[in-house]
Amino acid sequence: MNTSSTEKVVIIGCGPAGLAAARQLKLYGIDPLVFERDEPGGLFLNACSVINFPGVPEGISGRELIGRFPLPDRLMRSEVTLIDRTDSIYKIKSDRGISTRAFSVIVASGTVPVTTVIPGIEEARIRYDVKNPADFHGEQIAVLGGGDAALDYAMTLSSRYTVNVYSRGDFSKAVPHLLRKVQQNGKITLHINNLPASYDEDLIVVAFGRVAELDIISEKLLSSPPEDGSFHMCGDCINGKYRQASIAVGNGVEAAMKTVKYLKRYGDL
Image 1 (cartoon, rainbow, N blue to C red):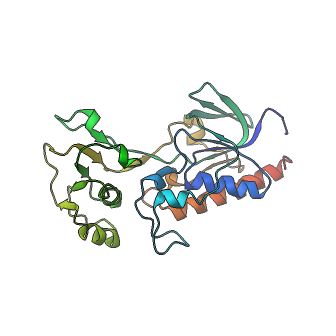
Image 2 (image 1 turned 45 degrees about the vertical axis):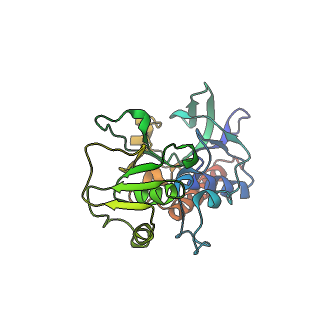
Image 3 (image 1 turned 45 degrees about the horizontal axis):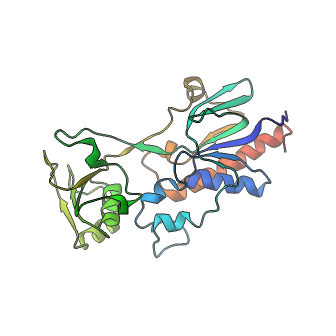
């Protein structure tokens, strides 16, 4: 099975799940090739405060927490466009014209935001994340959405701007702890049952939910994934409403361990 030009393991995505998988593989002596189109960290980079991750009960910013994760030794800053399998070999194509072969693949591709068109608002005024709030401009920001992401975005932005959060509902789906923190923040105003037709704020951050990013997987592979242990999806791309960092980390570790079992079975370890 061993071929010098074929990777043992390729990981797609460098958020909590991908990082955990890469670290677990490292413990087994495997250096996976990890693809990441953006900055490593995934949605941690948006998080104002993570309070439900083991070991940080006092809370910690997502960016600081991800800084405690060791980066993989072999990190490829490139966007994967297709994952397919022929016989027992996976083929991974990326936007930089790179074509990689692998015996096994761990997909930790995460999610992408639900986008929207707001009549009368030019696209340049709309954002879908708050990874770099210092790059925003103006004094007042609108956040659209009634869930945890919208409230967490508001907390992040409130360090620099005044924030109006507009929701179709009453924020009852948000975690009570986070909602209380927002209500106690003098720079954030909640607008219940109110999505205006127009906005006077300088920028608008949309938090209408996220969907799994699985379109990089071929239709055949996605509909009939191999059951031999060579292919795993983990983290936010499969966890639906249970998108939590601790769950993603556990997914990544499990995927790595099962991948090792597969490689041992076929004599590549």
